[in-house]
Length: 478
Image (tube, rainbow, N blue to C red):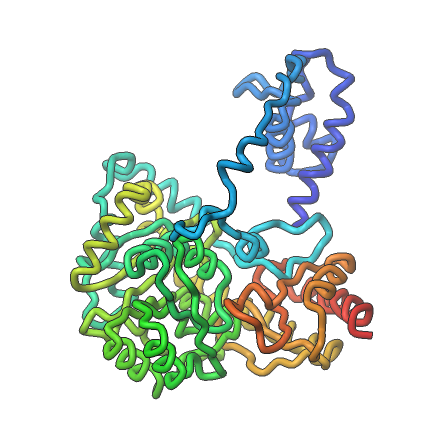
């Protein structure tokens, strides 16, 4: 957050001073800017890159930065009103909607304004990301023989083998496809398993990005309620009988947003119910590597206990590394694997080989287990700091479950709370939160917030964020 603010401030200062230089004139050297403004070389480099992206500065390697020459007058704006007809609302015959609602996904992807504490983030704060280890892995990967060539369509054999080992059971490398992150894998899975217009069973509440994927594919998400022990098997069986859905999408471990873990006695029952229905279970194992110190032994993925090919397993390295480290896996057995492979090849060809090589270098390095231990300790401290602050300053927010993994809490708001009004008031108070409504595919039973503790700078920022949230709650709730 501090580095980002410094870059913006330096860029603004240089922007104000550009009139001192004639078009094509040379700006002070990076060293001179470092000494004058007392910032790091990285800050100077990023500020100049920002000005270059705006067309105000031209950078020339080895020569320096220069004020850009005057731009030609912009061309007259065209008339795009014809697109309103071309992109008009779908007719009754359209199985797949042409408009896509990405609002639920953008909530966790968009960076908040400067100075706003990020309780709505979906990724690790830069201070928690293994930046040095990733940089070193990428550097080593680039020097591997054949690193810039075309990889196997299914992914590098060694990386597929690593994913198979982390899933466990009898899963083999031949049953794994390397994907460009978890979101891409979920998209491929839903396209493979359900035709446009079909229902698909989802947990309620559930990850908005998955709901967006389903709707963009023309599917109808049908909610199945979860409680503290995960999805309720009796209701799952009822939903399969009522809808004939070909698939059920779930997060058995540290479910988003509730943090629930599917209870041991429900795991086999969920697989049995899906098998009887002739349906698949899409297992989104998204935060297995973000376990807290007090979690105890983790249950194996459902895929590790499924010899019959009921489970299509999705996992990713992204949550435990960086939003830009988009390497994940799809695992399945039986004929469905070929369909998954075909869809992925048509959509993306393959995951870039340098990124796959970097993933292999990273997970095979001593830095990887050290990073996971450090993140586990830090997330535990942040979770405890947030739960403690909420209990002290906002006891009206009900925390029914405190998770032992993942990166967020799911407090219930007092009955009658206007989520949109509270979210807006929180932003005015300087803290960005996520309303609960986008997590439900139908009318929600109560108002909630999802509060992330992973995207902030530390426990001090958590305490300040909760104080700001209290201000917003006092404004909205009275």
